[in-house]
Length: 74
Image (cartoon, rainbow, N blue to C red; front, top):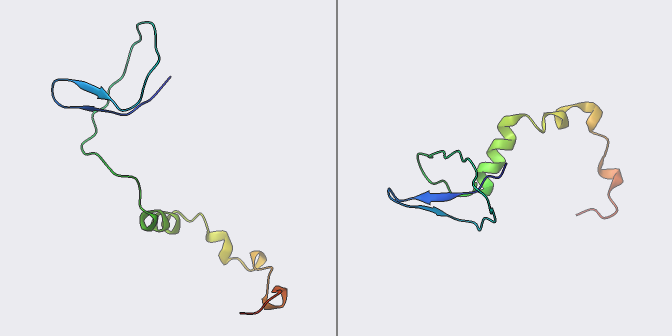
């Protein structure tokens, strides 16, 4: 299966990538309500914060470094 992005203007479908398919294929077309831009770094940070992906860092067992481990103190 191959997924690519495109734009449908109401009459024509424009593919945003080159596709090299040389035989007839069935397709599934999904219309998205709005064109979304890439996720911003701020949105990515909020997503990571809300996901709980870094919750393990709150555990005392994960706190294995101290200021004594620094080679240079700033």
